[in-house]
Length: 72
Image (cartoon, rainbow, N blue to C red):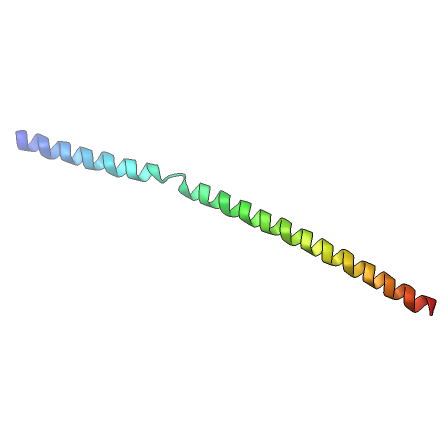
């Protein structure tokens, strides 16, 4: 009887440990995705600022060249 009780107690302990291990990592995927989204948003913002600067410089250069061609 004592052996059966110890066997049952061991099984319950193992099941409880397995459940604790599963629930401890439950939110890990959500956190990882949130971090990835924030990184991608930051990279997108940096790319947009760089694109706007390049585009503005190109517009200014084009206008200057058009003015030079128009005045000659």
